Length: 330
Image (cartoon, rainbow, N blue to C red):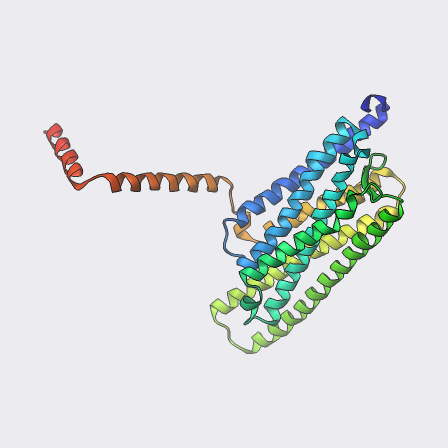
């Protein structure tokens, strides 16, 4: 229990919890802003907007688990991390991580199709196909973490280093190596390959457009597609950096605080940055204000009431009111 810990351990737990809560809260607010803005803006289009919503929800989920589950447990009752329910935090985080990575892969695929098959993109990424693809990636992410329900397959929070680590059992080693590490490497490599091919296509098209004239509408659409591409590239680079940080850079240090920075903090930071990239690349998201939702709802409610009043007021009643006003004014 917390009472059995030394003063130094209690202090370290408090510091790590405050750091996690601070980064996590920022991640929650940023991604919540993006989620609400995506529901209002039409700039992204259906397919890209839905995919962007998918990885933003995954980002929000990661930040929420760290902020509202991992940090409070560390602060109040660190021993709970070793219980069955406490260990489930790592399981949920893996689910959101996989969903986020798969959503980014779908984004890269969408950008690739847009550049290589611009006339068929609406036939390929239809509403039905987009919704099924997003549903599949979330179902796949859930299936990936089913083995973690076993007490032999662990990905738990180690209070000594303030980071999540895979257990030493054969099951933990297998899922940690293949379904997490190799899977992430494969997906990041696939994303990088798609982005590279998309970039080559952009360069080829850029050279062609120098020799041909484009309408203003075509030019705006081309610029928007290129902007979305570079947004996806920045997000992919951020996730690749976090992967290298978690599996390689942290192992070069013995100090627990340095490891904490390159693992837990990096994990939280990348999901916050992912949302910030969406905000930075899109003016509609940047200028969105949450109170606009409530103000527009109020205006809609008021106009609805006015319509009801106008529809229920008879012409004779209006004339009667006008006559009364005239009489009172005389």
